[in-house]
Length: 120
Picture 1 (cartoon, rainbow, N blue to C red):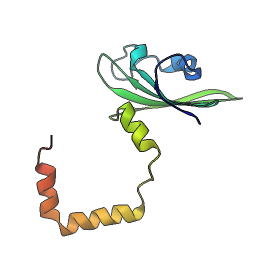
Picture 2: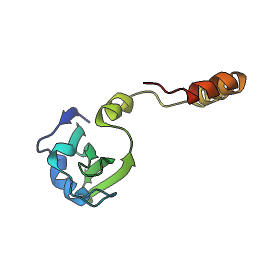
Picture 3: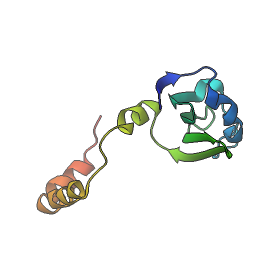
Picture 4: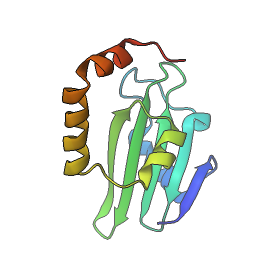
């Protein structure tokens, strides 16, 4: 899959986007400016859509095969830059989760204080 980060023009995924032309939250049609092509390969596209009316975002993957075109979309609080940054990071391991649990258990007061702080 080739990375075509943050391009806005016509792409092979643009025509398939007709199946996802409306925001699932408010039903307003997406504007072209709110569509970011994150990855554009010969058979797969990854798109980030932001509705200019309600500002909700959807992450969509479109797959083209001999059987037809499939798309899956999910609401997200990530912006396009977050998706690009996090897309190729290592997944969280079981050891990471256990370590985080230990930190919370051993430093519970510090952790609760940190969660309560307002960070700018």
